[in-house]
Amino acid sequence: MKMRHFLLSLVALLAMPAFAVKGVDDGSKFGTGEDSIRCLENLSMYQSYYKIKDYNAAFDSWKVVFDECPKAGGRTLYGNGAYLIVQKMMKAPAAEKQQWFDLLMKCYEQRIQYFGVDKKYSEAWIRGRQAIDYMNYSGDAAMLDKVLPWLKQAVDHGMHAADADVINSYFQMLEKQYQSNPDAYRANFIDEYLRVGEMLDKRVSMADKQMENYKLVRSNIDNIFSASGAADCKTLEGVFVQKVEAEKENAEALNKIIKIFRMAGCKESDVYFTASLYSHKLNPTAETAAGCAYQAIKQENYANAVTFFNEALQLQEDVNEKYDYAYHKAVVLQKMGRYAEARSAAYEAISYNNQQGEPYMIIAMMYADSNPFGDDKILAKTVFWAAVDKLEKAKSVDADCAAEANKLISLYRQHYPSKEDVFFKPELKPGTMFHIGGWINEDVRCRD
Image (cartoon, rainbow, N blue to C red; front, side, top):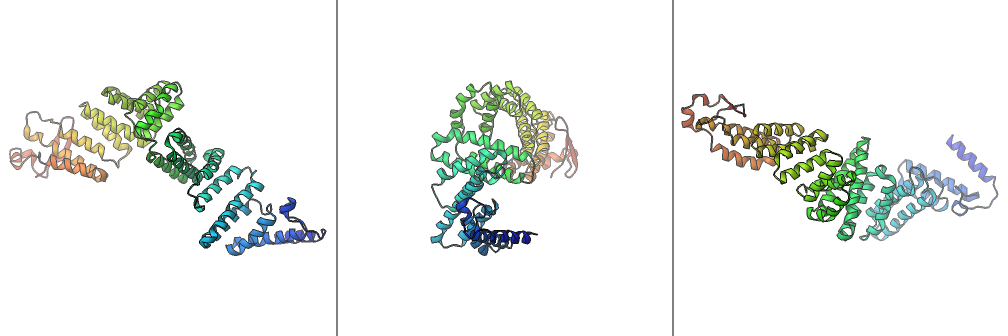
C-alpha cells in the first residue's frame, strides 16, 4: 500500500506543469515538479537505508531532503539527522570535525524553525538536546554562556518531565557558573539546587520506567552540591541568617533552608536551629523535630532532645532518616546514663538499617561501663565478654567500624576474668553459658 501511494503521488506530480521549485523555496512540504520528485525519491531512500542501519548511504539522501525540502519527513528527519551527523563527525579527520559540528547545530536550528511548535517536542525540548550535543562535541571551553540558557529553557519548560540527562547537565553548568563567581551566583545556585531537587523527587515518586535514571541524577546533584563549597556551614550561615528571620512565618521557605543545612551536615548551626524552631511551630515535620533535637543536644537539654527525636521518628517515613534519629537518640540516652532505654533505641536503629555497626558499639560501651554484680569483683568482669560479643557483631555487619571495634576489643580483653578468677567461680567454667543479670540480662559464653 505504501508503494502504491508513492507511485500515485509520482503520477500526480508528473501531470503537473514542468517547472520545478524546491520545498525550501516555496515553503511547501515537497516542492513542485521535478524537485518534488527528487525530494520524494531521496526521502524514501534515506528512510530505507536508515532502517537497515546503512548510515553512510542514508546520510547522502538525508542531506538532499534536509537542504531542499526541510518540511518533508517531519520531526523524525531531524532526530535521525542528528544521529547521522554525529556518526560522520566521530569518524571524520580532526580538520573536518568543525564543519560536521556546524552542520549538527544547523540541524537543531532548522528543526526549531520548521517544527519548534510541537506539543511534545517543543523548541525548549529541542534546545535541551542541542545543549547536550554542544557540550559533547563542541570542544568549546567557554560553552557556559551558550548552553546554560538552552538548558534552563528546557528545564523550565519540562520541569519534572524534562529529560534526566538534561537536568543533570543543567546542574553541572550551574555549578560551573557558581565556581566562576561564587559571590554573584551563590544564591541562585542554592535556589536552583532546591528547585531541581524537588523536580527530581517528584519524578522519582512517579515510579515509572525512567525512575532509576532520575534517582541517579538526584544522587549526582546532591554530590555536586555537597562538593561545590556552597554547602560550607559558615557560608550557609552568612547567606541564610537574615533570610530565616524574614521567612519565619513561611514554613515552605524554612523547610528548604533546613534541608540545605542537613545536606551540608550543618546540624549544629544556630541558623539551622532557629529555622527548625520557627518551622516546627508552624508545621511540625520530622525534619523540624530533628532540628529541635539537635539544638537541645547543643544546649545539653538531653530530655528535650529525646522528646524531639521521638517526635521525628513518628513523623518520618524514610528508613535511613529514621535510623539516624534512633541512633542519635541512643547516644543521648547513653549520655544520660539511661542504659536500658539507650539499648532499646540502638536496636530500633538497627531495625531500620542492619548494616550499621555503630549501634552495637554503643551497646558494647554501655555493657563495659556496667556492674550488675555489686561487690563481686570477679563476676563484674563478665560484662566485658558481653561487650566484646557486641563489638564482634559490629565488625561483622559494618567493615567501617572494624578499626575502632578492634581497639575496644583489645582493651576489654585485658579485663576478662583470669584463670585464677575462674578457679574461684565454678559457674564461669569455660565453654559454658553464664547469665548476666541486671539491665543487661543476657547469656554469654565463658572464655578461657
